View (cartoon, rainbow, N blue to C red):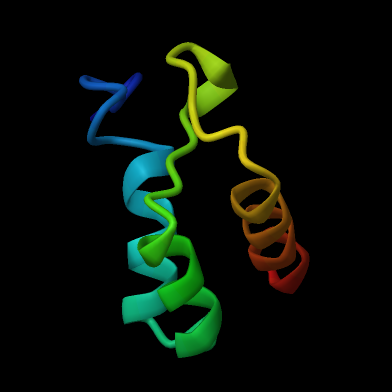
Length: 67
């Protein structure tokens, strides 16, 4: 049984979420490519500062709207 599976904020949550969605074919390739090309990064509850560029925020929000 796992009570709290979070062990590393750099690996366990948001940084792996977008690639996982893409690999499961839940987001389109152009959207994923924009996210990767702009080196976008977001972290759980902003514990670590993430990307704050307009393109990253817009891309992340568009991906979240698909979910």
